[in-house]
Image (cartoon, rainbow, N blue to C red; front, side, top):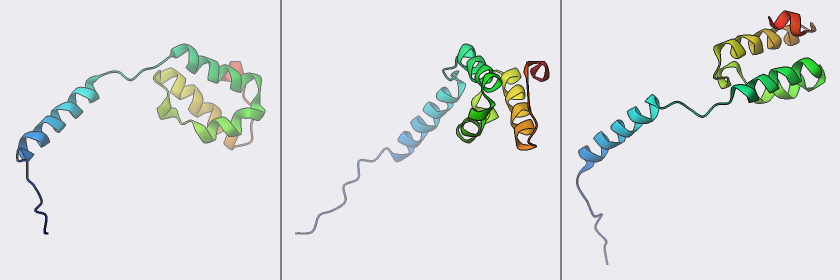
Length: 91
């Protein structure tokens, strides 16, 4: 017995619905926590030894706050150049 591939039609409508849904999702704010971001940056200041693991897991794009992203990028650059960083450099 040969089975026919059934067509349910409405492919164009489904595509339009998908595009509409994607647009709505793009407009929504992603969940974020400024306190958690600050805690990550604070932990880097307290324990530089954990920096390698943090830099492997996170990137500046993971931060909601542009300021936190810039601080993270600065810390990462200093770490990559084998420099130390402290809270004065964070400001």
